[in-house]
Length: 46
Image (tube, rainbow, N blue to C red):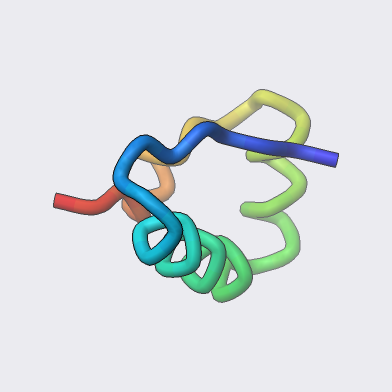
């Protein structure tokens, strides 16, 4: 299991979840393993 606090509320959390689900399997595995950060995968909100 992997988690990340989202300070911008439920809407922002749901958008982030949607973007994470759109990642490839290898990107998700790298994120969970700590080998990649969200900003490296270009899914952080601007």
